[in-house]
Image (cartoon, rainbow, N blue to C red; front, side, top):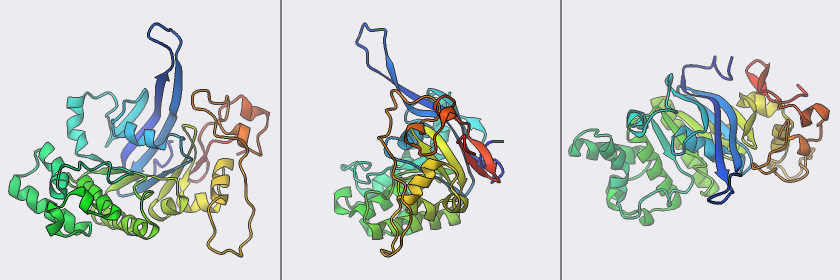
Length: 327
């Protein structure tokens, strides 16, 4: 049984997803290296739930997001939307699924065309997918502006006339325009002030409750992920090393990397004392990842088997999965 199979009807099911980038070698060279950006990732996102995907910078989170959206092509694996594998589909065959899949990018300014006014930016998905006539699209855009906390009078403003938080609200409104089943949120609040982060996160949660939209929420901030997610998957160097309900993950982490991540989260009480786990060494290169467990050369519990045998992500406790030889 795959992780989270019992949690509900999966809007998104990813099975053994792999993405490698070929690098090196000249025009006539036969030798090539590969960046192992995503290395056999599997997870599901049930209807109306949020899966948080966390890990260090460079672990492959954003590559997962773009591969799921088919913005980059997978090397292998399945990307099932409501049971249909979209990985092998052509651009034309993908068109009906584009309505069901939307993305909110990390940088709200870079993701908005500066030549278009905000109303046209939000209406663009409706035009592309032929949804409604001009009047119906205008009414839909006005409705979306109000829903994300903007005024209809701001529809004629350009992106540079909005604050960072307002621009991200425009990005959310645009993602909602086609009434998608799944929204991939790739670090959607990391560029915002803390107070604005809370507003955007609460907005996403309210919309989810109202419309039963599923989220794949990608971030490096565990506090943010814990607030919005139902389940959390922890990535390290292209692989998922732990996968569990958020309460189980925070109360009883089973993988040493997850343990180290949780120990690094700041505590609001300056007088509080707790053990800190300092990871030794640097994140290995995805061009030449370590054999066996990718984490073994930084793990304080590693033993001989970890260096030669890749641990399998398996269910250790009820709904709690980990890829570790210690478990």
